[in-house]
Image (cartoon, rainbow, N blue to C red; front, side, top):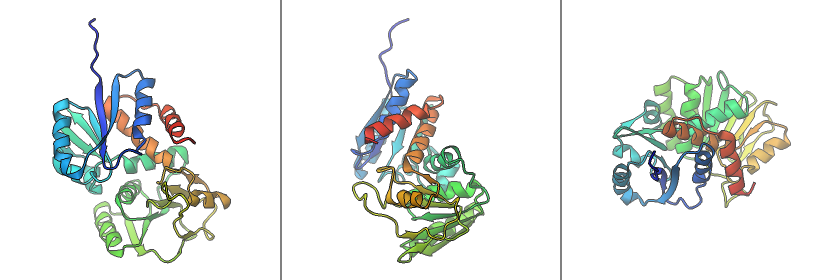
Length: 285
């Protein structure tokens, strides 16, 4: 059999991307399974996205990840968008299917896998509080709604943004979703089963910041989740641990959404443990 020196390519497109560690875990997964694949982290300015996608098609690349600021702008450059990604209104993963580029969103699915697998919690029938109304929040709220969460409360500083998101998702999913403006300090209610920080509060380098929430009334099994992965032990999670509440860090969401993407691209089950270990090593934790 003749030698084959051709590597399959996937990439992350964004601006900025220098501190995005996704490639570390994907490259580790490729090596673990003996796949001759490469993951490229590429900085692409907004006005160059169309040209970048032309290059993706020309190079025959197998897939993409999209990060800020391309998750919404990518929609008009794709041949197809999965129904749940269309519902979210953003794409973070693209798969090549023949000559077609198909957009998907694995953010919320990754979060949900972490809740079920790592935290061993089923969100069905629970009441959830989601802090924030940005892209991550929309993906998480959508997947929680589709998973049968009884009620979701969105807490956000911008009332207009929260109302627009909640009205849209409530109508399209049939889930009971409410919103409220963020007070000076938000008191987490006794009946909440999940609390999710879907904001960037506490993200490196602002590691000393914590969402202004009060956990004093939380039930003992409230699962406190943070979408921030760097640092994985945010001040919110540390505060929850001091009250002996179960927690789920942002590394869980990052790894599981990456594992879903890996399987979509390669058709093989992702080595989640290898990916998580590589990510922890890269982040020095």
